Image (cartoon, rainbow, N blue to C red):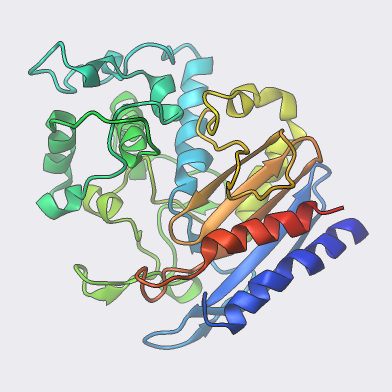
Length: 330
């Protein structure tokens, strides 16, 4: 525990500085090794408006895009391992109605593997929530929307579609599926890190999903998962302990991506000192998880950096990199 404690002391310093400077309301940093040893530290506020609440180690977080790797990627890869889907087949093998009014369009050729690695021509995001709040109609809109083809970018649409795959195969909405041990699709408003004072929902969001499209869809594959520092570290420890069983999430699909996860590249969120065997992912609300399989440790930084507004420079990008470099420094 001594090594982990010293790493935590060093790495929490920039988190504490960001909180004291008013950049983020609060944060939790947790580290775990492959033996299951772990340390955590917490500071700041889970909510500041309309009333203040202190953040604790039991505070729940809207994990945002960590949902992509903690839930959706895991489920899709399990289906591939079971032979239910072929990662190199088009997603139309499960979603035959996707853009079915034009059988020759490029959307119908997109594969599961391409969606996992963000190697598709979809745009990064489209505000589908602006079309209304009927989740069934929005699913139909997304499946029939005429997308503009562009260069491959990190796109929520890839994982919205993968979420539809899970729904179609399980014959239920994604919120009806088991989110996994220690995770949930919502949280107690009195024990959660609040996110945004939402303009269109007219309230401070606490315990309900921050992501606009996920909210309007009543659950989706790209966001919506809630968890605590303990549940995220439990997930990380299982991955570190079963390193050989995680081949695909460690297998590069591009210079920046594996199946679902990011891999090290210049300027990435995992800093400059992580090993080449590191994978990671971030969430818009201010969350993140990184696993270094070579060093045998993982860390999660959970913040509520969008509270009470996203329209503010929280400094989350340099903060994540500073924390990572402090953890991985000799």
